Image 1 (cartoon, chains in turn purple, red):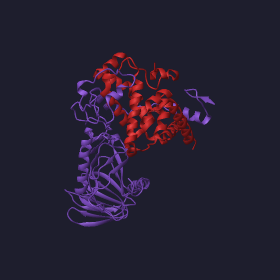
Image 2 (cartoon, chains in turn purple, orange):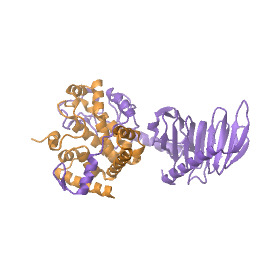
Image 3 (tube, chains in turn yellow, purple):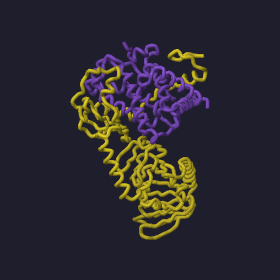
Length: 329
Length: 201
């Protein structure tokens, strides 16, 4: 039997658990967070992530290290309650926008109907209802399940460090550009998985009716595997030289400065070139559509490297889509 | 006369984290001087981040840390430079985590990430100079302990993290969590037993 910090007698197994917790190391903050947050904190521009209407300076000041007799400074009196303390910290009272946060605000708890936060939430709810009623369905969000490489990712023309994009959700229809050697892996509600290669510029698939999905690859390489919920749906990808229509397969669309290349591992892909010709690319084939000054088409078998890459992504996608499960998000 | 948390914890030693910075820094914080704020932030960032990590996990640790320092800035003018800020920071961090638990935000972002995939862990392992196989076992053990902690109900998780990880005495934990000293001790014992069971299982 051993004694803990308060002289309680504990058994061997409990002691082992206690020692395991006590020996856990510090977890330093990431360098990027340290750098950015330090700057914002020192300049007074660090905003909250989770709006917290219950927080007030008095409650904090009642903790031991603080002088409880001190008054609040003038710049903190916005939204003051009858006791003279701010009623809400969800909105900055210094007159600055609450946009200087490192991470987006997550919806916080609401406790007072008179809180200024209520107005914001009510307005957001009305907008949400209107959007739901009058805007076509865009589908569930894409989930970024893995990232690799170093560099930046642009989402709807806003730049993010690749680390910030990891495990985030991206809206259907978002324009995503990978820079440097960044590779993104995304899954969409059991429908399909996408891999965006380095220097890829793509509009993520979006749907107006939940069945016909449209996307665009402007540059780079997007590899797609359809998932268990895909049958009955169709994905159309617009590339610089052709539109690709997919009904359930594993394929890749590559667009570079001189051509669009469609590589199909499984199933078949209907391709409509922008001059109106229609063709079908079968499994195991790779079709290239070259543009001016020498527009022409070529078709050949997939190379061993292409097969290996597509097979690798197919296996990876099945595990991602399987882990996520049909109908879940 | 009631004991301050610092005095209550004398028997246990100081809580985790560095000793307070020089008094002129704390005084500067009360005036919101940028240099003092920056030094205060650097001084306590890892302490706050570590506690947040243990309480809410990796996916929300940075969010909590950001919220804590936002609140610190709001209340900086009330800092007493004579006292140890660690207790105050611990309280704000715990309360911020509790707000997140209440809001359910953590359920939206709950996700576990293999500690093997984290570059900072890799860097720490490289720096330690230990045998890679042993390092693998150590980091795996850390990950399993953290996973076991995160699987505990939130009150039990807080009890064990605040007492054993953060080094606060039961009196201080009771005050922070708003329960009696006796209840805090009972909750801790239950948490320890639950954790031991999960680590065995």
